[in-house]
Length: 344
Length: 86
Image 1 (cartoon, rainbow over the protein chains, first blue to last red):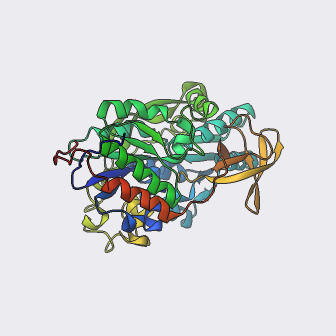
Image 2: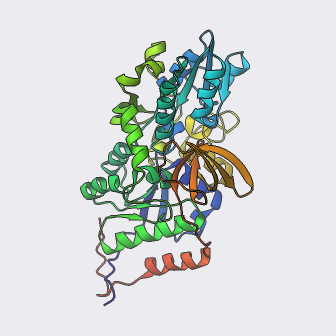
Image 3: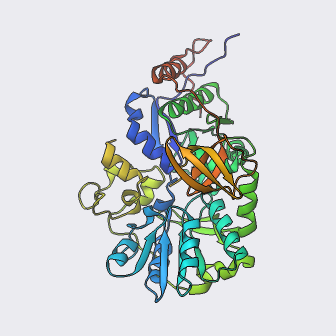
């Protein structure tokens, strides 16, 4: 018995919620290959892009203090705070170092006992367990000069916020492959049930993305919504139990401000009291001004998929990869950076 | 930022391992992944193995595009009424 296909509206809007997908889609030129009925929108999945200006300003203040070595992933170096960036501070003499892993930052702390070494933690569920492991290791080794500034976020509350948005109607989500290696597919189920929007967890190769889109369109056509795993070779329903336990051991969920979007409840990770002597927030107790988005910058709308980079007055003129205004252009996975480099 | 790269475990050293990224070797941590053996393929992110992955064959882009086109163009069995699915 052949399945019944329901006719659909003219355009199917699919949102990818992962900076790595934004880049993969842009680089591969897949949008040009897809049927015209399918529209791909980029969502707030680039952790660098959604880090609030307050969090950046905190890092800048700490980096400017005496005897501090600030360590960070490369992507954060050029993100602008209310004035300046880590990169600019480095050229002005601050000790700011790019690390590939939080474990490298811990090593720097052990090698420099007279300095306070701070790791700026930015990322989603892919990254937070690795930093949780490093925090536990630091405590185990008795390292007293290592601190983490947690800017970690949790993707699911943001997914819910977009799924429930009146401003933007998304028909399906292309879900992040590597976040899902950690979380498993189960946490998407409540979002799918509540909002009746299909979610397909997709890998990052060109063929993965096309297959992910196919699964979403098939669900939409058949009028149902469920969680599917296209990225079968890496994602299970249960995810990585050890990694999830580590996140729970070290962090607790707290409200968090997403740049250009505002506060999303329980969408951030804060270091638990048990590990507070490694919490940079407690150690440095920095106070910063409330953030102000630069004039004309619409990163917030771009992140929510409401505007495209081309609809931003600054895009390609005042805001370029060499001189970025907002985070969407600075981050190597930002939507604006992708559009600029590969075209829309 | 969430970039994770597949690699093969060549040596286990307690909580660490040496992996092969198709020629380039690196030491990484096994701190967030349990049950890893020599010869396993893992995804490496920020210096840590975050999950195991199976070896996959490459597939033809044309083939998968063709599948998508078929789904998009599929007719409704009852001739279609123009109803939209919301």
